[in-house]
Amino acid sequence: MKRTLLFLALSCLPLAAETLTGTVVDVMCKGRDLAGHTRDCAVKCAKGGYGLVLPDGKFVKFDEGGNARAFALLKAATKEKDLKAKVNGTLAGDVVKVQSLELQ
Image (cartoon, rainbow, N blue to C red; front, top):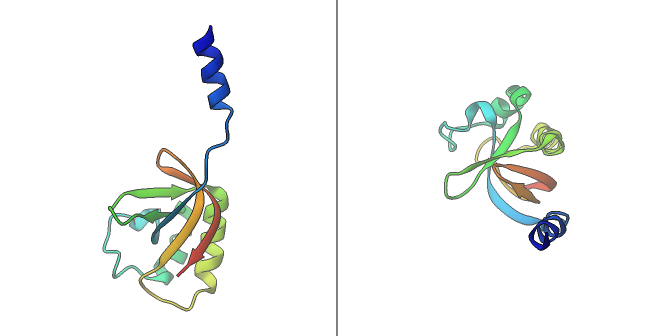
């Protein structure tokens, strides 16, 4: 009984936000050459969503809000390649609930 109550209490705690850095890429192109991946390609492939390739090569997908933010930023961006970004959010498995997203 005590374990169940402890589990329930801990599962109700909000997850701590963290800052992630990496390269923004559309889901369709996540396994391809990041250095050659362009902003235009990312905008054209928006339907599949976006994510961040971390420095260790791991890919984390954005939630729906993060996808919308990424699309808006990419459309307005002047940088064509090397789409580095800083993301603040909550990571749950391989999906990040994006609170803020900034292209660098």
